[in-house]
View 1 (cartoon, rainbow, N blue to C red):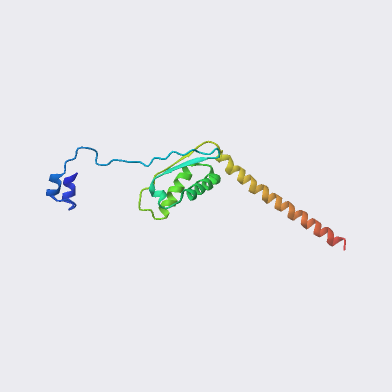
View 2: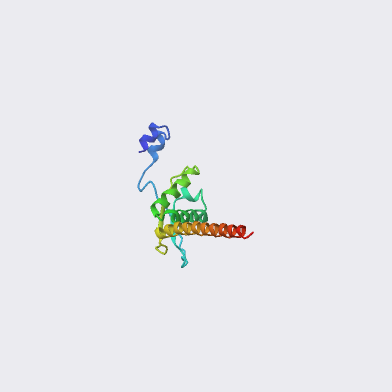
Amino acid sequence: MLQKGVQEGRWSEKFISRVRLNNDLVVAYPDIYQVDLGSDAEFIVLASDGLWDYMSSSDAVSFVREQLQKHGNIQVACEALAQAAMDRRTQDNVSIIIADLGKTDWENVAVQQQNMVLELVQALATIGIVSIGIWFSSQLSL
């Protein structure tokens, strides 16, 4: 590995002659936080700095919730969140895990919202028809 660095001009022969590798070249020192979740927690977003450098945690949660309300699919929401970070020109890798805590039936939320829109349209149509009927009735009585 070091010889390749010499070939690429990153190190000199003298430099690598003094290097003695005894352990792993890469050591991870993770940031660890313990947080008590509220009873209203719906999901957890775990992600690398490729996301967090370009999006705040509240924006990420709002984005995921919106995606889940649209289609109810955790995988699709995760991919959309990663794409949103990449669309912001992140130069870092983006790794994301969304853990659904099972408190919301996301698939039915999307269906319920579609039904609510349909019911709203039906209500507006009914109001419109009744209003036209009232107006027409008032015109006939003149």
